[in-house]
Length: 271
Image (cartoon, rainbow, N blue to C red):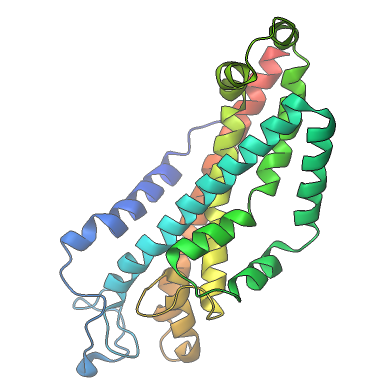
């Protein structure tokens, strides 16, 4: 019963984090890059609500700045990966035959390599930046979406009205845009919500290993990486960025579960 209810708390948390990262910095005037030798590794207090790092920089300001980078990478990567998966999956399900077999071989080829190791291999040959990470994470994240859309496209292709439209020689583009898209939209949004959380975790993992976002740019992953060496005496450096990643990921999973539940209910009703 809980999954059938709209996840208001998750939506509220997600919107709140986006507003905190993109709007609140205009009101919180402390710089994320200001060094203060008199404020090194200060615990959370009224002056620095999330404490400071090893260079005396305000952690709350850095979390907001780093959140912008992590969220931009997550949203853009998930959108591109989902869009590519949508095109590939619909093409396989609609055209079938040689096109479908070629796409299946391509998907299986990408899935042969573990995703994170493929990320490591790709990122090791280029200098990491927001654009590079978006492209690399997108390249490694479209396969699951493509497989789901392919399966759904096959089911749609078997519907009588689609067969009639093909016999009537209606343009494939028109059929896909007008009839496939509305039916596939729920799956697209489910994949997108999962993709955002996966991309944020991937970026954080790469940055934590030191091959993702590099200084002076900040992300939640780089903040965690900076805090791992002093975690025994400054727990807040790793805890707060990790907690933000957890909140975003958990909220997106809740929203995705809700969308999936509603989609399954519609399919049962239609049957």
